[in-house]
Length: 64
Image 1 (tube, helix red, strand yellow):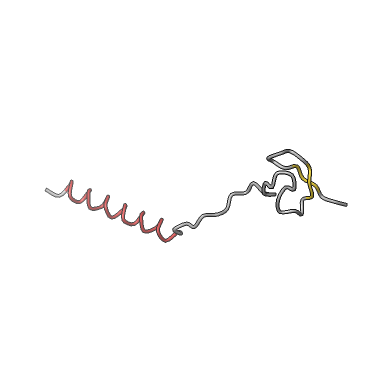
Image 2 (image 1 turned 120 degrees about the horizontal axis):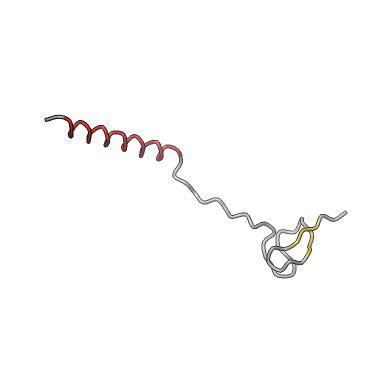
């Protein structure tokens, strides 16, 4: 039995195992590819710098 899906572009039915629609050549999946990210290390580094900046501001404000 053939698994079939409906093309999101031309709305025609085709075999789900095909990578592209045979009628309009649209990709089988509407999934967006993953783009490279900076990683969790950069996120943590930004937070640490933010906290250090806030501590520096409070020390400067309250030391007369």
